[in-house]
Length: 131
Image 1 (cartoon, rainbow, N blue to C red):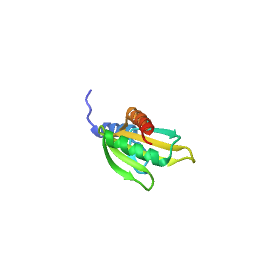
Image 2 (cartoon, rainbow, N blue to C red):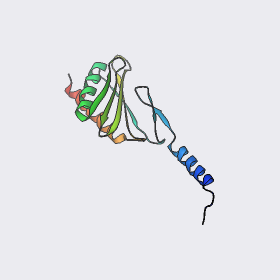
Image 3 (tube, one colour):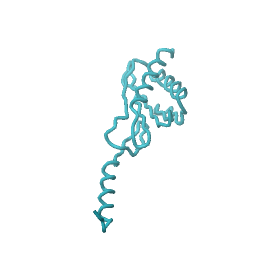
Image 4 (tube, one colour):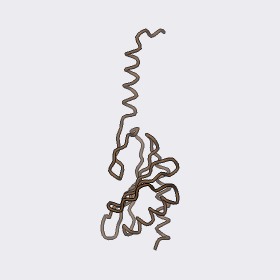
């Protein structure tokens, strides 16, 4: 089979690629990020601890596992680089006894939910050590 006109074939291939790759997600820090749709990248957990305890545990865990690049004390958001992946963490107070932790891990256009789960375990373990 000989293709004499490459423009329609190239346009169709480019359109199919754009449909597959197009997607955008908002990180816990409020920025947008291009993604491949269909991959779960965010874990949300609630702990019966104070915001200060979770912030301290987050700093320890992210520094131990990688490089903590953003530590925003105003809205308790963090950004780090762990195992060549981007990690975002947001801590919010739900009520007087409960604090919510949102962890998002992305690698390029994909997600790494396994690393998010591992970091969540480490946060929980660090909370048992933190006074």
